[in-house]
Length: 332
Image 1 (cartoon, helix red, strand yellow):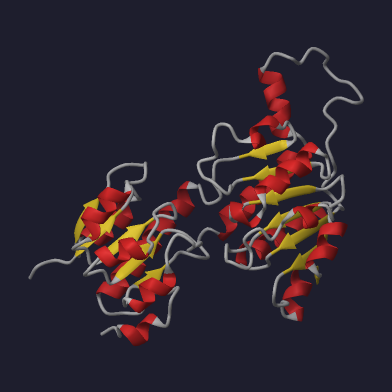
Image 2 (cartoon, helix red, strand yellow):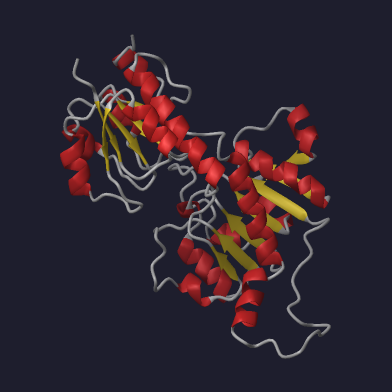
């Protein structure tokens, strides 16, 4: 019996690769760098499944070249790199890996929030640059308190909720905004109050974003909304860069509408070397490492592999992003 072919677009945990190779013929792009579009086009033409990353773009043109493709298993929570409608029409199951990266991303959110509030990155650069000449001074590297302040969470899904749970240890007042209000018991569990977005922005000392990128959320934090924030407030983003209007953010920093920014995601990734964001001392930047722990990335790879195996063996995957595909191509 001829084994089905699975394409894997990056090096992943050996446990996940073993799960795939025990069942399928695996075609691996053996690198930590992403494959080019030409490699993808050549290699998915006869593939039955693909395990991909959020930096691999699966648009209509590429999907039309994948004549046998039944499943795209993305090792990510976000799915803005895949044309879901086109995949569904072609009977391609699209799966993803939520839940497993919730705590890692919430932890990084807090690392960024504390880091920007206490000027950690700025202070380290100062020390490493040989500029520390006075042991202690009353006004030396003054940051901002976090304990007891107001935290505004934009998007109270899994990650936003995990951020809120951590905020309780800092005795923070928690506001949150999303399209649908949480159940009352869920609000009480973390002491959060539902708020309109503009109210949240104007009242919060720290604003952290945890939304998917959609046509509705693209540019949501625009110039008008940035102007609502306190001049002493900080903005943190570990979701998707394009949710913030980056040009407006740069203007806000230059004109000091806000105190500081901490970002793990950007409208263009990798961040261009000439990005104005690199010019500001009150900006803390990390290179999209929200889920980058050994444990989390291993489990993400395993879950992506499990999702792919499920579809190719005729079973519904644990995490299906386009459930309407079942009507186009039933499993079994």
